[in-house]
Image (spheres, rainbow, N blue to C red):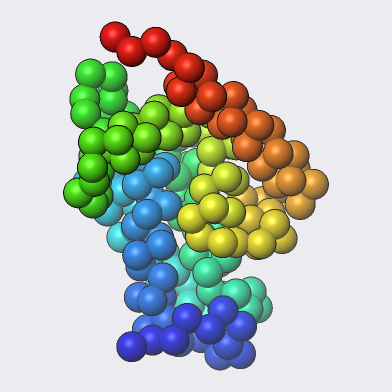
Length: 172
């Protein structure tokens, strides 16, 4: 199995496969559709593989791969070629079997995350799910570290507000 050492001095193409689960998870957040997310992961790995020679100057494979994915996603949005799926009226997918209360909490969290602006949601999920440092996120998204901290702070606060609203909302 490929090691996940982010700071290796020479490129190891097999190392990309070690990041596959995290890439898939982030792609699912960006695209909200399993097939589109898989296409984005494939495009990311293809781009990374074809430009492996550039990786040596970067040093951190995780940041490099997430940057490629983010840029491919943004490019698709700009071109307007990204197909979106209306999730209203569809039950959210839950990756694990959960008890009813846990499922309801996951549904409320998903709704609250989807209500956040995309910029805040991306930063929040990169910190919470992938444990990326602010500097890595800044490099991945091509924004200053201060912007990362600001988006994270606003995203967390807005998420708290949305979740407390979900809890207090009367049951229908």
